[in-house]
Amino acid sequence: MADTRLIQSRYRLLELIGRGGMGEVWRARDESLGRQVAVKCLKPMGPQHDRAFTRVLRERFRREARVAASLQHRGVTVVHDFGEHEGVLYLVMELLDGHNLSQLLEENEQHPLPVDHVVDIAEQVADALGYTHRQGIVHRDLKPANIMRLTDGTVKICDFGIARLGHDIGMTSRLTTTGLAMGTPHYMSPEQISGKEVDHRSDLYSLGCVLYEIATGVPPFDQEDAWAVLVGHRDTPPEPPRTHRAELPGFFDRVVLDLLAKAPEERPVDAGDLRRRIVLGRTGEQPALGPGPLALSAPGPPPGPRPRALPAWTRSMTAGHRATGATAPGAQRPDPAAGLTGQWTTGTAGASATRPPEPAAPDLLATLHGRHSAGIDLGRLGRWEEAGEVHREVAAQRGRVLGPARAAEGEAEFVMAREGVGVVGAEDPAA
View 1 (tube, rainbow, N blue to C red):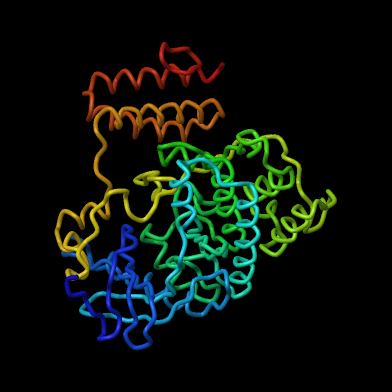
View 2: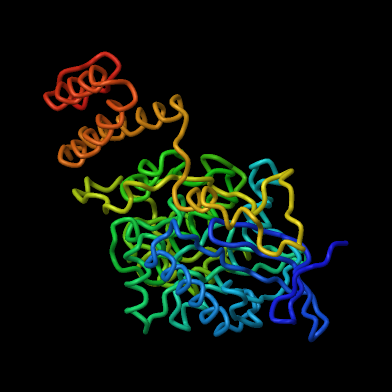
C-alpha cells in the first residue's frame, strides 16, 4: 500500500468514503488513540473564488464543528476534533458503519424502504431533532444524505454546516446572504423559499419531505427544474403518500401531511409532539382530532393564491439530484498518498463546484418548456406579475438558444394567454 497522508501527525487518511461539492470525507486512523475515525476536509478554494466566498465557506465549516461538538445524543454524529492542516480545515468525527438514506434509496433502485423501517426512522429522527431543537439549534438542511442508518438500526443526523444557533443571529445573517446556506430545493420549507426567518418547524417540514421520499420513492414535488420545485413547496398541496403506496399506515399518512403544511403553525408543535404521534400510531392508538398539540389536522382545500415572488437567489438554483450517494458507482477512488485529491487544485474543477455545467440544448429546451408552463399556471391563478417575470426570463434564454424569431413566438403566446385567447401548443389560462 502506498504511504498514506498524516494530518497533524495524528490522523492517517486511509480511504475516501464520500465526496460533496465542498469537501471530502475519509476513513482514517487516529494514531494517538488507535481507533478508526472519519475525517471531513473542506475543499481549498482556488483564486477563481472571491475572498468573501471562501471566508463564508470556512466560517460555515467552523460552525459545523462548534454546533456538532456541543450536541451529545445517540441520534447525532459525535465530533472528536477540529483543526487546520496546511491550509485545509478538517473535522474528525465518529466513523459510522452504515449508509445514509440517499444511499439506501439508490441501493433499492429508488424503490421505497420497508414500511417498518420508515416508521422507525421517523421516530428516531424526531427524537434527535427534539434534542437539537431544545439546545436552540435548527439544522436547516435536513435531507436523505444527511441522515445515516447504521447496521444496528440506529439513526443519526449528520452535517450541521448551516445550522442556526438561536443566539447567533449575526453569523446566521452573514451565512445566508451569500445564498450558500439556504438548503436543498427538494427539502426546503416554504418559509425558507420565501426568505423568511425559520425556526424548528422548518426542520419538521424538511423531515416531512424526507419521510415522503423514503416511504414512496419520490419526493413530494418531483420536478427536475428547481424553480418548479420551489413553487410546488410554496403553493401546491402535496398528494397524500398513500396515493403512491396504499400499504402505508393511515396515521403515517396524516403525520406526513401535517409536517408538509405550508404554514408553520399548522405543523406539529415541535419534534416531541411529532414523536408522540408516531409512538401512538405504532401502538395502534390514534390521537383525538381537535385542538391541541396532538390533534391531527385533516387535509383541507388547496390554499388560495399567494401573491409573493420567489427571492432573487432562487433564479440560479438547480434542482440537482433528489437523493444521491456520496460517490458515484464505479468512480475511481483517489490514492490516499495524494492526500486531498488533485482535482481540488485545478481551476476547472473549482469552477464546476460553484456553477453547474450548462445543459445540452435538448435538456435546456425541456427546462424552458417546464418554466413556460409554470408561468402559464401562475397566470391561471391570476398572478400575472409573477407569470410575466417568469416569461421574460424564459424568452431571453429561448432567444439565445433558438434566435429572436422563436423568442417573439413565445412573446405572442404569452400575450394571447394574458388576454384569454387560446394558442396552439400553449395552455389557455381562461380554461
